[in-house]
Picture (cartoon, rainbow, N blue to C red):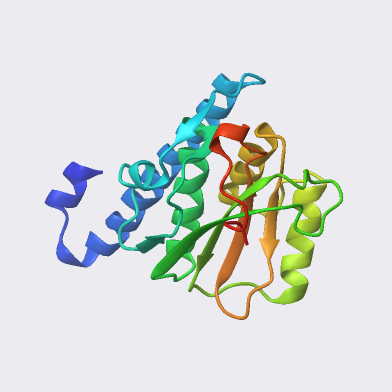
Length: 197
């Protein structure tokens, strides 16, 4: 594709660029799937510096605001795969900015460990209508990864499940927001009381 793009006339450049972008997205999805399969049941949790991890991800053209300053207890490779796909989704749905925050608690879900850490991503893209979000959440909860659930949400949910949690779509007035459950960190990595929420 790179050779074709260099040699193609100007009127074909946008189509070739879209093909290259799609190929790059597919490469990232395949990489994420391989990471999941390699991890299997053996998730390699360790302290992860989220700003450092984000520095190695393809985030352009997004402005990413990371409000997470303490280490996350996660598998860095799986977390990177989930974030790369969620950020790619944000771009494809018109987002210009994404904010990342960390919260703890069961988020109103009795199935979730009340000590669970949730990495929240909120973008300023097109978002979803309430009924559409409910439908997608039901599909994610049932592990029925079919339309309208795309690969990005499916991979993020699989990563959350590998960490003993799940992906939760969050109700927001504008844009789109998800919470990626990461289970809970050992006591040594826990935030000080009152720091969460």
